[in-house]
Amino acid sequence: MSAYLLQRLLLTIPILLGIVILTFFMVHLTPGDAVSAMQGQMKMSAQQMEQLRQALGLNDPLHVQLGRYLMKLIQGDLGRSLFGGQPVALLIASNIGATIQLTVAAMVVAIVIGMPLGVLAAIKRGTLCDAVSVIVAMIGVSIPSFWLGLMMIQLFAVTLGWLPITENRSARGLIMPAAALGLAEAAIIVRLTRATMVEILNADYVRTARAKGLLDHIVLWRHALRNGLLPLITMIGMQFGTLLGGAVVIENVFARQGLGTLVTQAVINRDFPVVQGCVLVAATMYVLVNLLVDILYVVIDPRIRYS
Amino acid sequence: MQATDAMSQTAQQPLRAGNTPIALRPGAKRWHNAFWRHRSLLVGSIMLSIILVGVAFPSLFTDRSPVVMNIRDRLQPPNLVYPFGTDQYGRDLLARVLYGGRTSLLMGGVPILIAASTGCVLGLLSGYYGRWLDALIMRVMDVWIALPIILLALTIVTALGPGLVNIMIAIGIAWIPYYTRMVRGAVLSVREYSFVEAARVLGLSDGRILLRHILPNIIVPLIVMSSMGIAGAILTGASLSFIGMGPQAPTPEWGLILADGRQFIRLAWWIGLFPGAAIALTVLGANLLGDGLRDWLDPRMKL
Image 1 (tube, chains in turn red, orange):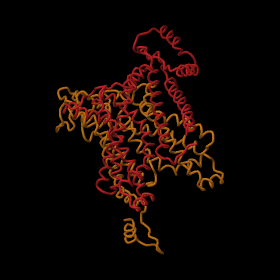
Image 2: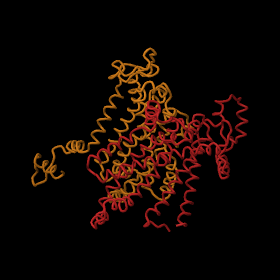
Image 3: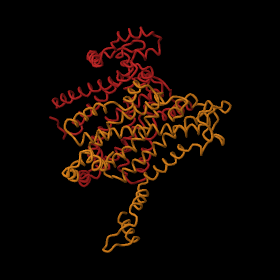
Image 4: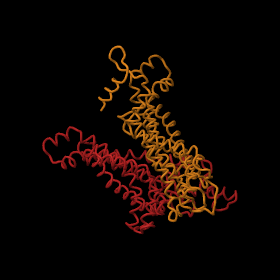
């Protein structure tokens, strides 16, 4: 197990390295460098721009710049913001907590709503209850989360006054953003849970369990759902990336502090180091969550042994 | 159910010598059956057709311009003159939603065209030639897919700058690895069939085998994935243009109309309702169509 873990950890290194290189080239291989982006904000003469380019090392060949970026990255240095000059690592550190809170809360919303509904639909397959949950799930995946957020603000904050629109450090302030972000995910989980459970409930071992007289709920929770968990957590791991992307938009809707608002502002300012840092951190989180999912397999399904 | 279908077919249709029932126009019959049996296909295509007509011929429904302001009529609730009401500048919301649909649908179609064609080429090469080319392409895709779509698109927008064309390129690029992986998987299974081997034995060129023998066999999952992809791309495009990365005002576009009017939603609910509902209904239509196509064309496919 620990050998597998080590191997799996080592395998993430080339992926992360690849992400660094890919984002680096995407940001750098286009016309208009960081200095001309800064020019928009503060007036500089051509000579000053040239000096700044020299100072930032933008005149060096790309691979030299990449090498320098990687060397700094190993030391935890993500560069500095082109506007204000704060270290990118510091900016990310002060914003990442709020984003993790939001995505985890949204995931909880999605699982708490999605899994029971999916199981229910599978048990009552072919009934009205099933049809309704399938239709609701279909509508759920089609509603844009930012629009849902806007409508929730209108209803719960403006009209009814039950919840605050923006409260960065309170649980109450998290309810609406998490719900707006999580409901579409819930719909996806309903669909997958239903499909998985329908298959499992027809499996031989479930029939055997029923035939030997086990109670329905034991068959469901111990035999069926446990086997259905594997595809489910695989998908939840994959959906984490979608949630991170969705958080960018939702944070903007609710004017919440977080990586999303940070990266949006940086994209508009063409603040390359900040964008690159944020994307890198988000992708790293995504890769690590999927690593965690792989490890969870062993916990959930003892038949899986890695050696 | 199926048995009765088969029976009624034999009862209605002329019989050939022997006992094999044949339909007069098999193609038409199959289409007809498919539509009625797969309700999501039917509902999805009806919804999309209505939206497409509205978006393609906005002048049938309104003779107003989506950009001309009329301050005297600002923030009018829906009425007979303005069925969807007006926004904070007195622009007709119906016209804005209809004309805006052009941009929004474009943002759903073009990126998927970019992603599906590029992904298809990469997947064909990767699956057919295998070896180092496969390893190289798939490792690059592993990295690519580790970047969440919206974040990858944002990175590209940083480099290219915001705008309609750039956002379509960005979303398209972000979607490539999903198509590459799917096409590669499909090619790997098709490659094993003996008709491919036969074509090779006959001495056909690789290009011809790929285009004439392998591509037609993977076109079904490609179509299904694309119709669902369009739904996803419309959502992503609207989200990104809502946060200001897409087309700029006063271009009508569903996400942008919402962003533009968001301060006024508390005064005028219709500004929030109609553009959002347009996105949701279009995406729902495309999703239903995709679901229906999958059930009809390939019931075993898991997407």
